[in-house]
Length: 84
Image (cartoon, rainbow, N blue to C red; front, side, top):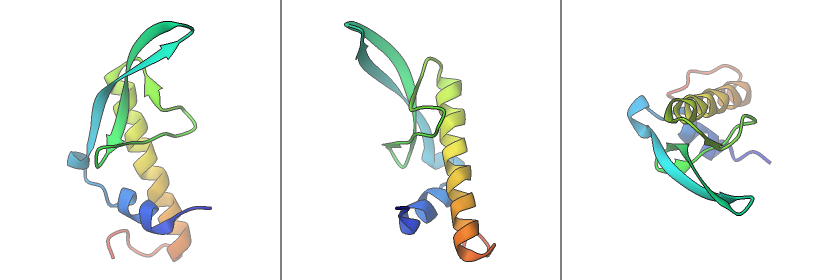
């Protein structure tokens, strides 16, 4: 179930609300260091994943997440302007 209020909040995120943070995870008993994209300080994920080996990939994924939220909002409001 999609939470339209959250999707709208993420859809309205400014570029300055999107960031990249370091991310550490144990994979196959080895510490892996990468990056995650965040919006409002919260990690976001798409079908591409959550954690990436480069900060550029993580940032692009967060921007993709925002665009997907904008699309959800457009469909839910019948194409009404994003910033109501």
